[in-house]
Amino acid sequence: MASFIIEGGHPLKGEITPQGAKNEALQVLCATLLTSEPVRIQNVPNIADVNNQIRLLRDIGVKTRINGPGDITFQADDVNLEYLQSDEFLSRCARLRGSVMFVGPLLARFGKAMVAKPGGDKIGRRRLDTHFFGMQKLGASFIYNKERQVFNIEADHLKGSYMLLDEASVTGTANIIMAAVMAQGTTTIYNAACEPYIQQLCRMLCNMGAKIEGIASNLLTIHGVQELHGTEHTILPDMIEVGSFIGMAALCGEGVLIKNVNYEELGIIPYTFKRLGIRLEHRGDDIFVPQQDHYEIDSFIDGSFMTIADAPWPGLTPDLLSVLLVVSTQAKGSVLIHQKMFESRLFFVDKLIDMGAQIILCDPHRAVVVGHDRQICLHGGRMSSPDIRAGIALLIAALSATGTSEIENIEQIDRGYQDIEGRLNALGARITRKE
Image 1 (cartoon, rainbow, N blue to C red):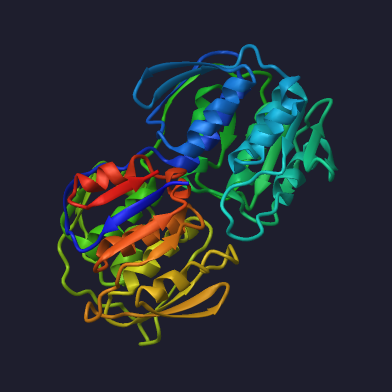
Image 2: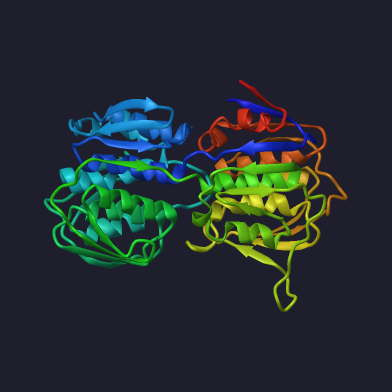
């Protein structure tokens, strides 16, 4: 198990460019299974979760060709369906939550799929009901083998249907879309997730020959086609990484320029940081975060206590609440952070309290942060990263703290952030990886 040694108190300054979006990459990689023709994907992030997804594709027979950094061509013209039932494949699926999105394309193209109950972040219950509800509405049947923790899904043929999803699940919506594009007839998905990742997946599928209406809304209409063809696709910048860099720059920067952020796809993220008093300058497709000795948390128009909560798109992504919470510790004022979607994601705050932060954890979903207004600095400590987003939040806290910190289990951070220590050290941070 590796760890980061962080010497805090060194200001960040310079330029940094976000990687390709992790969540989009996991979806569009699975979509390559829908055709036997080559699919070229660019701006693929070099991170653990994405690399593991690529290895799974190779294991089941998908050919890959590296055209350059982050530029890969996939061709699924000889998929090994027998390997999908092997213990080795299922064991690897169990360690990667994105593997559940193999179900949709495999079911659409081959009529059957098998997947282990997937892993991923330990952030509370993350059910798969939405995925399987959609597949059942399309005519698939599934059996859960409790002993092996394996789902077997089969369908003689998929048939379009109307469905109202019980939750706007991003991966669930992606899975259902990939199954529906080759189903007979028309599929209508109401309460569909409409995050930029889903929009990108839909655009890629349309370029492959799919017929999808309502992209960017929560009501999708999909007219099934018999087959799809190859295409080229470029992944968006990772908006979670953009938000993470804004948080770092606000807390411990002396002027940081975040380049090529695809600003129009960031939604409410810049506005949310501004509600914490963070100054941002929108420069073309870049964001400049100036040095901020003080920033004050806003209040609502009626003067009431500021609350920041996650919500389905175009609401605030839950993946940034951990970063916003850390940034709030040095603001002037107080804020309630309300994490609605996952019941265990705020448990990392005890580590921030140990570092000197003033936080009241009300329950698994809510925390009140009383800002220090930089009158009291966080101090270094030893901690462990429980998940990707808490990991980056702890790293931001350590960068701003006095003294030296050690963050263990940084494999969690590696799952979502590409060469994070190298890129931050180039801005002036002092982070050492200890194996």
